[in-house]
Image 1 (spheres, rainbow, N blue to C red):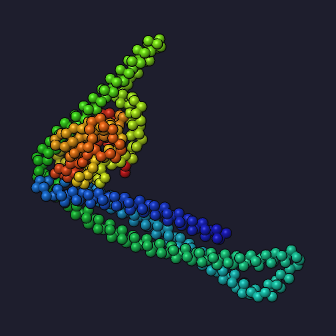
Image 2 (image 1 turned 120 degrees about the vertical axis):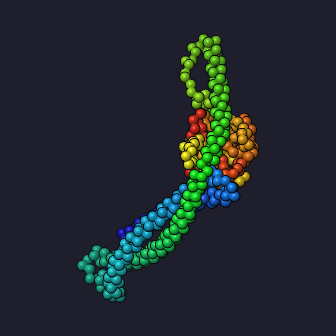
Image 3 (image 1 turned 135 degrees about the vertical axis):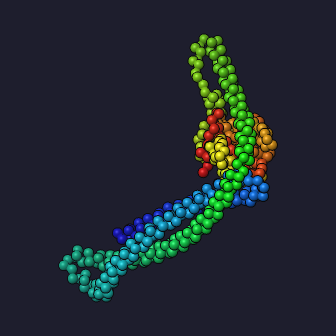
Length: 417
């Protein structure tokens, strides 16, 4: 029974350690990913800091870096909490095992004393022959055999418990060293965060002095983005119109055939833009596939950090809206399709290219490309290169959007975490 208990204890310990190990590994991977983003942002800030005039991109990069540093500190806090749980769990197990070991030693000592008193063959023989009958003598022989086996099992159990205690103490020492390292790392990150917040404060003061210039920059950005959005909307609307006309023509021909064959004409159903765009089996399959990959789409660039999120933003007293996300990447980074589909259009505006892909009734838009490697009407596969990102005064930043029909969607909800 005790051997079974030891076995269950070892299994429970192994499972608990595995669960903690998985959690620790996930936290470590998360922290490493955050650090890669921070390093990418810092490299870009080092390259763009030579600009005489502070840019919106630099402000966004610093804000993103501070957010990531805060996230990293939060991850370290989770790692420390995880280690505290492990230390508490292992400390309790060591106390329990030590209690079991003390009891086992007492029981084993009693068995040894009994064995010493009955160790010679004559005493064992007399113990058997003193039985009242043959059945009792047989039981006494079996008892002596089982006692020897039980003593051996107890010795193994005692040894196993001792080893388990030594192992757990070793794990505890390792946990304490890891916790000390993490706390030191956390203090270093807090110092860095404080330094970056000071840098942010200086930038905010500079914004106040350059308020007029920033308003002009934002106004110019809005005008450019409005032109780009208009081109995208027109292209999507044109695609919807083509799909509508095609569907109506197919419906007209089907009705003519029905009349010629004397069959009733199908009732006219009200259709939406989405139904026109997914009228063909191929388009419907693409649309369903895109939707089923929500939260799992690959990133359009290999190295990435979001420097501006989807939605409303305010810089100083000026406000604007971002219909996608701005992704900082590396110079010369390849921009890749996040899902298979067809090139809706390739357009050059304000010195850079825009590529729009159609995936049934979903669209993905890739802005700020220096060069492109696809043309209108091309079929593309997932992760196929569309072009190379352009690098301006804010660095190599890709503007990425996802739309369903004419509705803008938050790309962060669609790309992999």
